[in-house]
Image 1 (cartoon, rainbow, N blue to C red):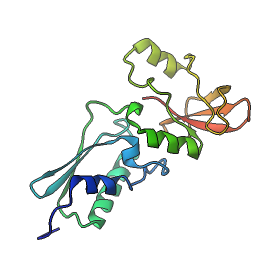
Image 2 (cartoon, rainbow, N blue to C red; image 1 turned 90 degrees about the vertical axis):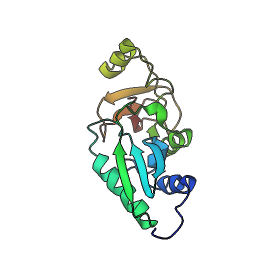
Image 3 (cartoon, rainbow, N blue to C red; image 1 turned 120 degrees about the horizontal axis):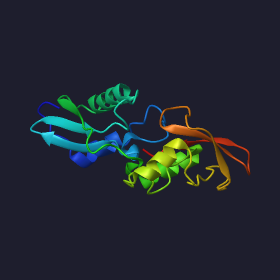
Length: 174
C-alpha cells in the first residue's frame, strides 16, 4: 500500500471476518474469537491472534490464511503476533458463530461452561462425569449421549441424539 492511504481498522476486521477457520470452514476466525487485536503501528498492520490452544495443529495454517487474505487486499507491511494470555476460551465464540456451528450440525459450546474457574466442574467435564446437557443441533432434543470425548478434531467430542438417532459433534468447552 505504498503511497496509498492505509485502510481503516473496521475494513481490515471485515476482511478478517471473511477468513474461514481451516478445521471448521463454516465459521470465520473472527466468529471463533481468535483475532484479539488489529492495529496500525506506523505503516505496519499488526494482527494479534490467540490460538484455541497452544498446541493447535491449525495455527500455522491460520497464520498463512490471514497473511494471504491481507496481502490480497494490498497490505504489504504485516506482522502477526501470537498472544497466549489470557488463553482462548469458547466463551469468545460470537453469537453468530454459535448459530453457524448449529446450522452446520455441530453443537456449540454450552454458554457459561468454559471459563467458570471452578476446577471440579472442569475436571468433571473432561472426565465425562458432568451432567452438562448437550442439545442435538439437528432436532434440538436434550436426549443426547456422548460417544467419545474425541471427535474429528481436538476441539470436538462425538455425540449421538437418542431421539433422531443422528450422530453429531460438540464443540468442547475449553
